[in-house]
Length: 254
Image (cartoon, rainbow, N blue to C red; front, side, top):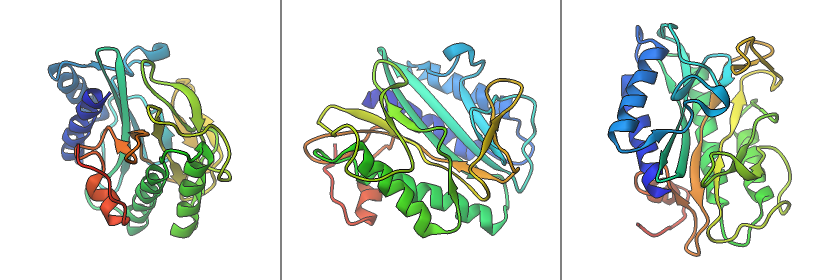
């Protein structure tokens, strides 16, 4: 899973640097598929329950599961890119939210709040904790960041030989509840937050999830393993060492 996670990480790094005004979401998808395959992996999303692309590209009021196509990115847009890869039957899954050119300060803050909530959730992936402790870390960090809403209908998940496995990892709720975190368990933590209401609708393509009120949204995700030495972020090149250090948490380099 670490091998799959590193492919996801390098793919998202490539896509982050490729996001620019004038680029289409379909061009980003082609870059992603080529990079994943050239890295000796397979795209997790392509064909998954009929999904027609290798990444999800969700722009502005699109929360998640946006289908790449001819849409041209414009300066001021905010795009969330979700990517998955399979290596030897094992999955990695992560997502980033990226500004397109110069964007409004409120969107920069939205994306930063989402990432902060993600890392707070990842820091709670500790042996002996419960799923609810991840949930509480995410939701409390969002609340402390500003007047954002947390999407409840779409959640994180277990991951391994399938992209989606038990247990679910909600982004709202109380701590000390749910399955106990034991070494070897791997989950995808993925907060989705909005500038307005957290209510969502699904478009006629049966995939793209949008905010009901048209407010902009952000989505961040990492795949993380429970170990006796603390959380190991499989989709972060350094395993999370640097980000956890910013939170005052020491994890071993691997």
